[in-house]
Length: 148
Image 1 (spheres, rainbow, N blue to C red):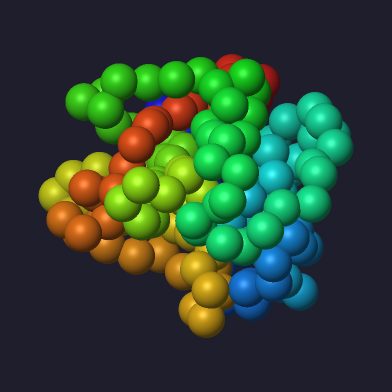
Image 2 (cartoon, one colour; image 1 turned 180 degrees about the vertical axis):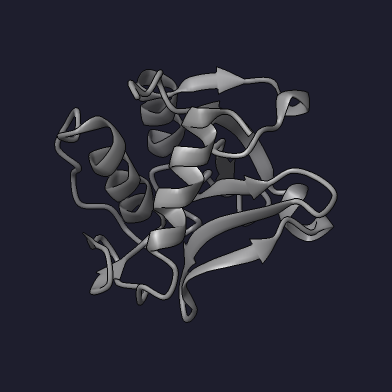
Protein backbone atom coordinates (compact mmCIF):
# COMPACT_ATOMS: atom_id res chain seq x y z
CA UNK A 1 0.00 0.00 0.00
CA UNK A 2 1.35 3.45 -0.87
CA UNK A 3 2.14 5.83 1.97
CA UNK A 4 -0.72 8.21 1.03
CA UNK A 5 -3.11 5.26 0.74
CA UNK A 6 -1.98 3.99 4.15
CA UNK A 7 -2.61 7.41 5.69
CA UNK A 8 -6.12 7.63 4.22
CA UNK A 9 -7.07 4.13 5.40
CA UNK A 10 -5.52 4.65 8.86
CA UNK A 11 -7.44 7.89 9.36
CA UNK A 12 -10.70 6.37 8.09
CA UNK A 13 -10.27 3.47 10.54
CA UNK A 14 -10.02 5.97 13.40
CA UNK A 15 -13.66 6.83 12.61
CA UNK A 16 -14.92 3.23 12.98
CA UNK A 17 -17.82 3.08 15.41
CA UNK A 18 -18.80 6.73 14.97
CA UNK A 19 -22.62 6.88 14.91
CA UNK A 20 -24.46 7.83 11.73
CA UNK A 21 -25.75 11.42 11.86
CA UNK A 22 -26.95 13.06 8.64
CA UNK A 23 -24.79 16.07 7.62
CA UNK A 24 -22.43 15.66 10.60
CA UNK A 25 -18.64 15.26 10.49
CA UNK A 26 -17.33 14.75 14.02
CA UNK A 27 -15.31 11.61 14.77
CA UNK A 28 -16.79 9.73 17.70
CA UNK A 29 -19.93 11.91 17.88
CA UNK A 30 -21.59 11.52 14.47
CA UNK A 31 -21.06 11.54 10.73
CA UNK A 32 -22.56 10.55 7.42
CA UNK A 33 -20.63 9.23 4.42
CA UNK A 34 -19.67 12.70 3.19
CA UNK A 35 -18.77 13.75 6.72
CA UNK A 36 -16.37 10.79 6.97
CA UNK A 37 -14.61 11.90 3.81
CA UNK A 38 -14.55 15.51 5.05
CA UNK A 39 -13.00 14.39 8.35
CA UNK A 40 -10.30 12.37 6.61
CA UNK A 41 -9.60 15.39 4.36
CA UNK A 42 -9.24 17.72 7.39
CA UNK A 43 -6.91 15.29 9.16
CA UNK A 44 -4.63 14.77 6.15
CA UNK A 45 -4.94 17.95 4.08
CA UNK A 46 -6.12 20.68 6.43
CA UNK A 47 -9.17 22.94 6.11
CA UNK A 48 -11.97 21.87 3.80
CA UNK A 49 -11.68 23.55 0.39
CA UNK A 50 -15.29 24.77 0.25
CA UNK A 51 -18.41 25.06 2.36
CA UNK A 52 -20.86 22.17 2.21
CA UNK A 53 -24.42 23.25 1.43
CA UNK A 54 -27.37 21.44 3.06
CA UNK A 55 -28.31 18.21 1.30
CA UNK A 56 -31.00 15.59 1.63
CA UNK A 57 -30.54 12.01 2.71
CA UNK A 58 -32.80 10.89 -0.15
CA UNK A 59 -30.93 8.64 -2.60
CA UNK A 60 -33.55 9.39 -5.28
CA UNK A 61 -32.85 13.12 -5.28
CA UNK A 62 -35.67 14.92 -7.07
CA UNK A 63 -33.33 17.52 -8.58
CA UNK A 64 -31.51 14.74 -10.52
CA UNK A 65 -28.24 16.71 -10.28
CA UNK A 66 -25.04 14.73 -9.72
CA UNK A 67 -23.74 17.29 -7.19
CA UNK A 68 -21.64 14.81 -5.22
CA UNK A 69 -20.01 13.47 -8.39
CA UNK A 70 -19.30 16.99 -9.66
CA UNK A 71 -17.66 17.95 -6.35
CA UNK A 72 -15.58 14.76 -6.31
CA UNK A 73 -14.33 15.44 -9.84
CA UNK A 74 -13.36 18.98 -8.86
CA UNK A 75 -11.54 18.11 -5.61
CA UNK A 76 -10.24 14.57 -6.08
CA UNK A 77 -8.29 12.79 -8.84
CA UNK A 78 -10.47 10.51 -11.02
CA UNK A 79 -9.09 6.99 -11.46
CA UNK A 80 -9.96 4.11 -13.78
CA UNK A 81 -11.92 1.29 -12.16
CA UNK A 82 -9.13 -1.23 -12.83
CA UNK A 83 -6.59 0.86 -10.87
CA UNK A 84 -8.08 0.05 -7.45
CA UNK A 85 -5.88 0.85 -4.47
CA UNK A 86 -6.33 1.23 -0.73
CA UNK A 87 -7.26 4.81 0.12
CA UNK A 88 -9.38 5.29 -3.00
CA UNK A 89 -12.65 7.16 -2.63
CA UNK A 90 -15.57 5.16 -4.04
CA UNK A 91 -18.75 6.81 -5.29
CA UNK A 92 -21.88 4.65 -5.31
CA UNK A 93 -25.27 4.91 -7.00
CA UNK A 94 -27.54 3.19 -4.48
CA UNK A 95 -30.68 2.94 -6.58
CA UNK A 96 -31.13 2.30 -10.28
CA UNK A 97 -31.83 5.63 -11.93
CA UNK A 98 -30.97 7.56 -8.76
CA UNK A 99 -28.13 10.03 -8.38
CA UNK A 100 -24.81 8.91 -6.90
CA UNK A 101 -25.09 9.76 -3.20
CA UNK A 102 -22.93 7.37 -1.19
CA UNK A 103 -19.19 7.45 -0.56
CA UNK A 104 -16.69 5.04 0.90
CA UNK A 105 -12.94 4.62 1.23
CA UNK A 106 -11.40 1.40 -0.08
CA UNK A 107 -9.41 -0.19 2.73
CA UNK A 108 -8.32 -3.49 1.15
CA UNK A 109 -7.99 -4.59 -2.48
CA UNK A 110 -6.88 -8.23 -2.35
CA UNK A 111 -7.47 -10.95 -1.46
CA UNK A 112 -10.78 -9.72 0.00
CA UNK A 113 -11.76 -6.16 -1.03
CA UNK A 114 -13.15 -3.99 1.78
CA UNK A 115 -14.25 -0.40 2.27
CA UNK A 116 -15.02 1.98 5.12
CA UNK A 117 -18.22 4.03 5.03
CA UNK A 118 -20.85 5.66 7.21
CA UNK A 119 -24.13 3.87 6.68
CA UNK A 120 -27.59 4.70 8.00
CA UNK A 121 -28.43 2.51 10.97
CA UNK A 122 -24.86 1.20 11.29
CA UNK A 123 -22.51 4.18 11.72
CA UNK A 124 -18.98 3.99 10.37
CA UNK A 125 -18.17 0.40 9.50
CA UNK A 126 -15.64 -1.54 7.44
CA UNK A 127 -17.58 -3.76 5.04
CA UNK A 128 -16.70 -6.38 2.45
CA UNK A 129 -16.77 -4.85 -1.03
CA UNK A 130 -19.12 -7.65 -2.07
CA UNK A 131 -20.65 -7.99 -5.53
CA UNK A 132 -23.82 -6.07 -4.58
CA UNK A 133 -21.69 -3.15 -3.37
CA UNK A 134 -19.14 -3.35 -6.20
CA UNK A 135 -21.80 -3.18 -8.90
CA UNK A 136 -23.04 0.11 -7.42
CA UNK A 137 -19.67 1.86 -7.84
CA UNK A 138 -19.95 4.55 -10.52
CA UNK A 139 -16.61 6.31 -10.01
CA UNK A 140 -13.29 5.93 -8.23
CA UNK A 141 -11.05 8.76 -7.05
CA UNK A 142 -7.78 9.33 -5.22
CA UNK A 143 -7.03 12.08 -2.75
CA UNK A 144 -4.83 14.83 -4.18
CA UNK A 145 -1.19 14.29 -3.28
CA UNK A 146 -0.79 14.20 0.48
CA UNK A 147 2.39 15.73 1.78
CA UNK A 148 4.15 13.48 4.29
